[in-house]
Length: 306
Image (cartoon, rainbow, N blue to C red):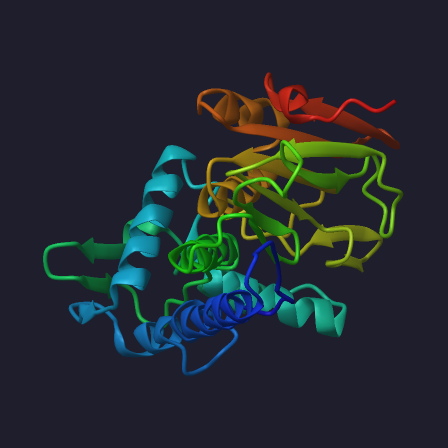
């Protein structure tokens, strides 16, 4: 899925710990073969190649479940989260490499293939139909959290409950480490690369995900564009923000971090505050200054500093 993965776990038996972690990493690789848009032979990319108007394709339970969940979030956020954004994302990846804006004609053609309503899902038949030719799906805003949830469940199947699965910032947590009341997760009050960690969360049996453009953006004609694309406009975000979301599981934290990035502080926090057990922190550049926005419950998860 284009990122580094790590697992931290506590166990009393080394062979069991080794077997559990090996099986968890193996499951992540299996899910990568299903959900990755980087792998040309993944099930996701095969679906994009094979499906089209009037061509529903039977898919695996993992892909079906995640596409259905993605479509539901798209409806809830009025399109701020949309996995059909793939054609536009591809143009922006090229734009970042070439340091120039996408060609106007190609851009409009790509935008015409975006919209969660263009993806027909049949749970009964276990099929997905992409109703426009050459649609492309991108699960980059949800797949890592989903795979991390599955990896933690694999560890639990081996009797290991004290564990952390980290997909380069999408973190899923099990029971606390021995002698503690939770995992200590560091965050920063700054969004600068390699910024000092000055705030800490204390979490267990939850997940936390961060979405931002500190390391992935491009400056074209003196304007900064994020790798996070707004499905409404097809443009990379220009507000330079970082969003950290706490939720009950990885798939929720990962996808909400992406959605809130697009929604912005007012609508994003309104969405988060409607969901029990969910909280967020937004750092956003406004008028040359870094401003912080927090949902109602974010401070509940913070560790007080001495």
